[in-house]
Length: 263
Image (cartoon, rainbow, N blue to C red; front, side, top):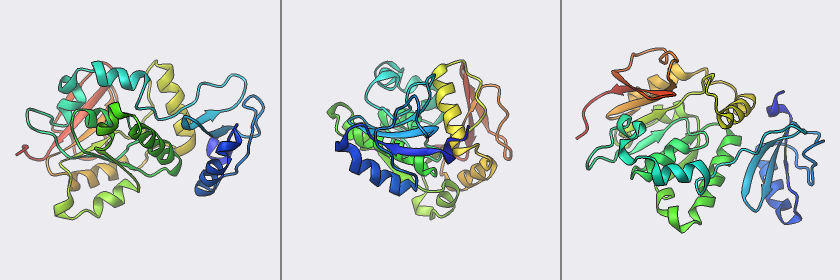
């Protein structure tokens, strides 16, 4: 089933009809109000409601919706109890006493890793080339700005709907980020139902990252200090320049391409 060819925006309350139609126009997909999730004519629906925007597969045995939520759930738990700069992602990106690099997350997706880095004090530029994923991501950021508890964290996050390779290649020497962070789409094998639901849905919508090698090359030219690539623990490295060293966790691995030491 390919949701990319069978997607519509919908609303269940007429209050949200206008923003749903505006979103449909922006994404060049149909707008269809009051869709029944069990028997919808569409394989996937972007639902606009009081919580923001959520992506929902239709059908009677559908999984739960996918939305970007920085306020509650697993993301909130990690913010409060995740281990601070002791986390592997923090070590991989070079966070140390007094060091909070400017990070470009060039494969932002749902923004979870970027939010972790912003929580730890980094300014993060999130790049996303899929218009659909960008709308989910940007909506999550805007929703979070209204929550006083995390508003300061989200202010360190800047979202851009761009092609990452083109954007990185366009940077002048003065605009280079300290770290470029990559998490290319890869056939995940984790057992988590949450991961399976989101990854399978995303693959059906945006496909694989077949240009990961070109993205790594652009990142290596753009970063001042290092490039970090997140991979499933047993996955091969991205084709091209080998990493300087690796940090391995239970389910994922960080390949670090060290260019020079932090000042």
